[in-house]
Image 1 (cartoon, rainbow, N blue to C red):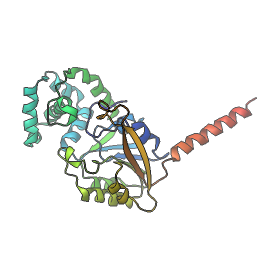
Image 2 (cartoon, one colour; image 1 turned 30 degrees about the vertical axis):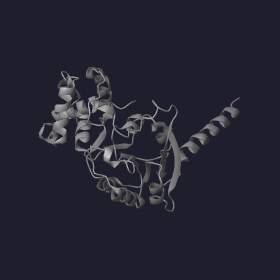
Image 3 (cartoon, rainbow, N blue to C red; image 1 turned 135 degrees about the vertical axis):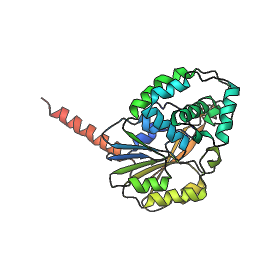
Image 4 (cartoon, rainbow, N blue to C red; image 1 turned 120 degrees about the vertical axis):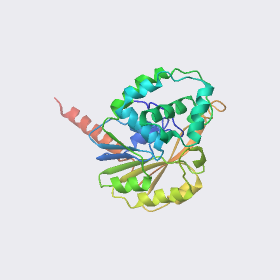
Amino acid sequence: MNSFMSWLGGKKALRDAVLARFPPYYERYIEVFGGAGWVLFHKPPGMDFEVYNDFNGNLANLYRCVRDNPNKLKYKLRYVLDSREDFDWIASLHKRGLFSRFRDVDRAAKFYQLIRYSYASGLDSFGSQPHSIWSDFPMIDLAARRLQKVVVENKDFEKLIRQYDRPVSFFYCDPPYFATENYYKDVGFKTKDHIRLRDSLMDIKGKFLVSYNDCPEIRELWDKPNIHIEEISRLNNLAQRYDGGCQYAELLISNYDTSERLQAVRQLSLFDDETDNLEV
């Protein structure tokens, strides 16, 4: 399924490739930099324990309200105006850090409105695209059902990784990309944090998969023994209007062989073929 919202750096275009590289077995799935949750929502719900985390408190609160109080959230959104004046007022509250003064559902409704009506979900400028927020309600309902058994956290990534690390844990990390950190609101992420993320993951008992922009700094940072770095590309959505077919280079970094799942599927297929041949 799709996410109920958009977010800067969302993995909609890359979600199939990411999911195909998940390890064949794990019991805990932890999405460390949750954002719009494109990978989580695309991932079939199973028996594994699932965690969504984001350091942005407004985003974590929105997810909790979608999960626990979707009807109250939709009620608050019923009479939202698609207007620049209304957007500018809410954006000013956000810039002044006043969202935390509102009750959870009111805070979630205002933040969702800010996301939905801002240009490219950047939270700053009005998008000027007519949209009825009522049309989003079915996706909010679907998201509420999908999130029922998902733990929603609002923690620093280092504390989260330490808390949930087990031999059966699998961490998917989609941090702010290198040299793009200033685009992410409410989240201070600097070069030292990229180093801290690497150091936090290098010693874990479980497995991890990290998606990054392909650049020399990140390649050098992760050039370590037993670390797999895979090049991958996707369509550059922002550049499509000017250069059709433009590709954006990314890296998938892991502490395991990302072809394990594909190999397991192939082995099962071969076994099925052999079974078919034995049938009389």
